[in-house]
Image 1 (tube, helix red, strand yellow):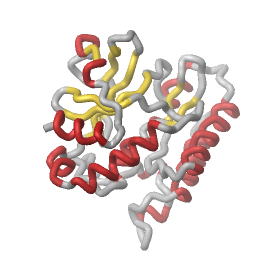
Image 2: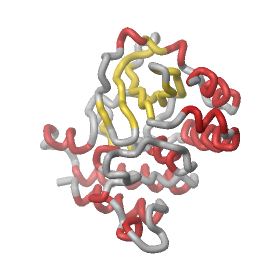
Image 3: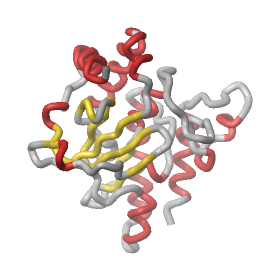
Length: 222
């Protein structure tokens, strides 16, 4: 089923990297197990190290709802067109272990919290500026991140912060059936704006809620 859905997404402009994945370079277990998907580390046949994120999306929902496919393809394509040094580059999609994976360059310094634990001389102010610039760019092109937190900011080999994991937010925002984490929330409470926790805007991510989360990320950089 994954191959069939991927073929449909490719028809909408999403690059299919299935034949470029060096499957032997990936470990059996994910490098990171998140609430909405698993991340695997490996390589393309070209030698480029990549991360493959496999969201927990119901493929049947995608297959049976053409409108969802069209919307998801359009928004993933908008991610692919993102061109900013502080936004993670999207390479394409691939069939990966029976599911659809989103492929992006591997960031060897890992997440922001992990990087700060070992990079004592890192320019904290510069990191904050880079993250702000990445979020500002996403907002300028009409993308709401929806799950901004320290773990969703990655650090390149050159120590540059890049905003990541908004691809999963794109999928969540299209009302797809996704297996939720145990707590059943589509965001992380620590980083969530108050309006997401109750009232008319409960659970609805906006640029404003992104800004609140951005402030929480910046205050965590010490």
